[in-house]
Length: 381
Image (cartoon, rainbow, N blue to C red; front, side, top):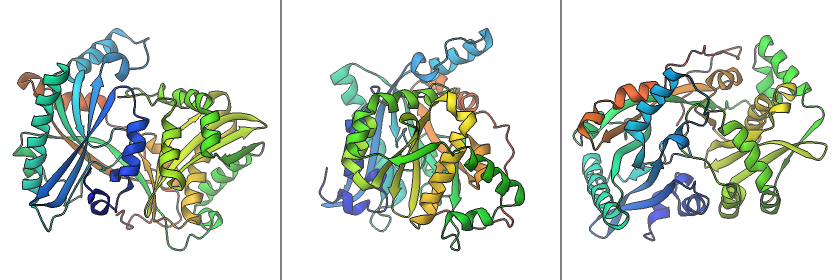
C-alpha cells in the first residue's frame, strides 16, 4: 500500500493497514481482500477496500430444515447472488468503512469513476487468472443522511441501484453520563427495574478481558460460542474462522477487546469491541444457549459494552444491525442505511430490489424509549 494510506484515513480504524492486515490474516474462507488507491498526479487522494466474496447456498442459509415455500425463496436468492461478487466495503462490519476520498482534491463523481474503472480491471484479472466471473458489484452501508457519500445520482450514472437495508443501531453517550449509575438514573422506572433484574441474574458469573494468549488458548471454545449465535441467523454471507479473534488482537492490540464470561471456570460467552477513535464499535459475540435466558447474557453484554463506552468517554456505542428491539430497549436509535449494487446479468439485475426486500424484510418491532427524556436530538457523527 502507498505510504500515505494511513495518514489519509486516520479518522477510521477500519480503513487503516493494521486492521486490514488483521482482517486479511483472519478472513473468512470465502472472502479475499483487494485495495484500491486513487492518485491525482503523485498525491494519494482516495482509497477503497474491496472484498471478493464467494457465495453459495450453504453459506447464505444455515438451517437445512425449511418448508417448500422457504426453499423456493432461498433458491431464488441463491440464483441472483450465488457465485463471485465484489463488495466495496466490509461485510464483517456494519457501516461505511470501505471508501474514502479527499473532497478538496477530487470530486466524488470522478473518484467513483476511478473506482469503477479499477473494479472492471479487477473483474477481468479475476476472470483471466482464476476463471471466475464476477456476478454482482455492491457498494455497502451508507447512512441515508450522509451527504458526502450517499449520492444516488452519482451511483445511478454508473448503473448502480439503490437498495434499503436494515438500520445501524447506535447509542449516543450523553455528556452527563460519567458512570453506569448515571445511565441507570436516566432510565424510566420500567427500564431501571429491567436493568436491576438483568444485573441480578449475573451474580454467579464473572467477566474478564482476555489477553492475546488467552484468546489463542480458548480459540476453539470461542469459535463454538460464536457459531451458536451465527448459525441462528436467517441469512449470512460468511463464517469467521477460529483464528479470527487471535488475528484481531495480535494486530490491533489495545484497540481490540474480547471480554469472556465465566461461570466458575466454564467459559459460557463473550463479546468483543473495537475502539475506533470516538466511536466504540461492538463486534462479534457468542454464548452458550443453556445460560442465555437464565443469566440474561445478551442483555447484560449490551449493558457492559455501554458501561465501557461511558467510562472510557466514547461519544457513541455502535451496536450495528440485527436484534433491533433489544438494542432499542438499552437506548440505541435506528439509523437508516442503504447500499448500491448492480448485477452483471441484465435480467437478474431487475430482480435485485425484490430479492433484497426478501433478505431484509420489514422488521416487525417497536422502537423502545427507555429514557425519562428523549435524547433523539443527539446526532451520531
